[in-house]
Amino acid sequence: MRVKFVIAGALFFVVLGLSGCGPAPTQGIGIASKNCQGDPSVYPTPQCLPGSDLMLTPNVPVWGNVVNQYYLNGVDQTQGTVDYFGNNADPPATTGSSGVLIVNNAEAPAYWNLYWLEPWNCGYNTDPQTPPVYEGVTYYEGADWSEYEAPNALVGNYYPSKTVVALDCVHYGALLPASRRFAILGNLPNALTLGSAVPLTTQNGMPLLYVYDQTGTVVATETATSVSSDGTQATFPFPSTLPQSGYSLALVNQTGVGIGFAPAGDNLLSIASSQTIAGNPFGVSAGAQTYNRTYYSLCPTRGQKTQCTKSSTYNTFPVVSLYSKNQVLVGSTAVSVGTNPTAIAAYSSGPVYEDFGDDCHTDIRAFSGTTRAVVANSGSNSVSVLDIVNDALLFNVTVGNQPVALVVNSTGSEAYVANYKDSTVTPVNLSAGTASASVAVGGKPTSVALTSAGILWVGGVGFLTEINTQTMSVVATESTAGKTIVSLGYSDAYNELVVSSVDTSGNVYVEEVTPSTFQAGAAYAPVASQTVSTVGTYLNPVTNKEVQGYTATLAKASTSVINTYQPGAPPIVVQDGWAVITATPTGFTITDISGNVVLVSETTPSPITAIAVDPKLNVAYLVMPDSNTLLTVPLPGTN
Image 1: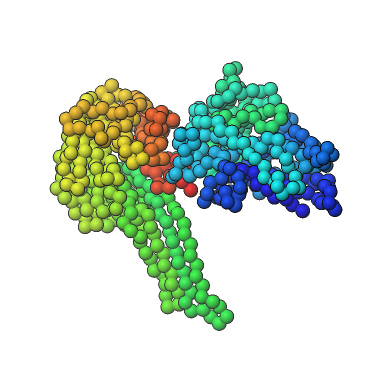
Image 2 (image 1 turned 45 degrees about the vertical axis):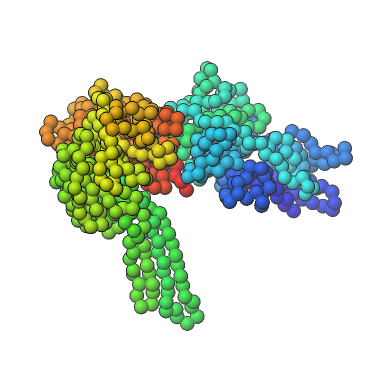
């Protein structure tokens, strides 16, 4: 007989052999660790949330030991042999690939201390699209840790009234920084250092590091090589076998009985891949398409029935402008466009259908998502519109002098193109392939951003301008007082403009601007400003000379100069209202705008000119024209 009962956050299977009316010797117990996100009407536990899933998690670390024998009417009911697992002599056991940990000859019925560790919060909804609020603080998946605990729990009780065991959810708060959050395959570091929120100890063995993939499965474990004298951090060998992906980490102490603490980790560890692309990849956008196929067999032979097959897949790929080749690379297919293409944006123009049916079959295939792209051709004063389903140029539209930045509205009907030499913005009808009259702005524009309400922001050399796209008129312009705005982004969640700027001393900032305080003629006054870098130097791999840390492709002593401090990449709101990725002259940063904290600051082989992320937050693409490099950086994702 197998008795099954739910523990909030875990499902326990107690394997028993019964004979007659009394307890028989225990054969063992099985523990299946689960994320507690089930319907409370079905799973009567205090941590579960309605409408969410109860998901089996394989390879989860589990600790446990018997703490008391079980007595009924003064008689010891315990049978079998005491079996400790996860004690100081052995590493913690795991639930294995099936998600179930079998402990043979375990003592039951008996009172156990049971503990396990998951890469998410026990009992809280961790969907990144709908972040939970716990004690007034909003948390995001992987951004903090909780420990599942069932202390002094009766395992193996035969009485239905006592089959539900209470769970304590111990919350440890925000994770502390790690020495590395980003690495590129082929150039992985040797070590990884993690900070701890509680003192680390080596009394029962060195601290352990667990590495979880995006499904919550443990894919690597490491033992610390050293612990700081004050117990605040531990250093581990970098898990060198990890493939390109995003990972969560957990740091635990080993203790003599039960689990150690789960105090620290890093939810932003990303293993990126690097690809060499000739032609100076300058702009990038994320192609993200859902492919649906519906197939009907209309002429069944005798004995057969009409067949209907439906399938759906989601695919992401980079769409890259090649500055010196005058091409756009859609995945791996090159499409010729205008001269010196720079900024590019993929967008949706409705599904694209293909019919491969015949007299006896209906075979309809549909592509939805980003089906088109528009690219600014800085050398031919035009934009090119492309079909990125069939990888073809549709048409070119003439705009202003040296277009270098653009943005597309949410319906995919119109683009707004910033022309550097003209100091103008040109609206382009993407359906008709026509341009309207340009609007003058406050200086040489380098970047644009569009809000959900249709407000266009334009930044550049010494200015920030607000434009009403309904009337295509300037609402207000502020002087940035010695700063050049080099990239813009917008957070709907916070109703804030995110700005990358460079001052005359070469300092690079990530700043936040509140539209409600923006006034015509006023001085530029961001509500928050973080220095993330300085304009340094790096070795140009082509010329083998030291140059300033801006894009050498467009920074030459000629009329093609955009700005001598031009990082060139727009900030990307990866988790709306939370993290922003922005380029710096020598790398990129990830900034938490909810707390105005720089989370990640990394260097790259050469300056980044563009960053793109797919709508489901599965991947970010970063391009570096001076080293002909495309980086693919995995992100946590929304599903």
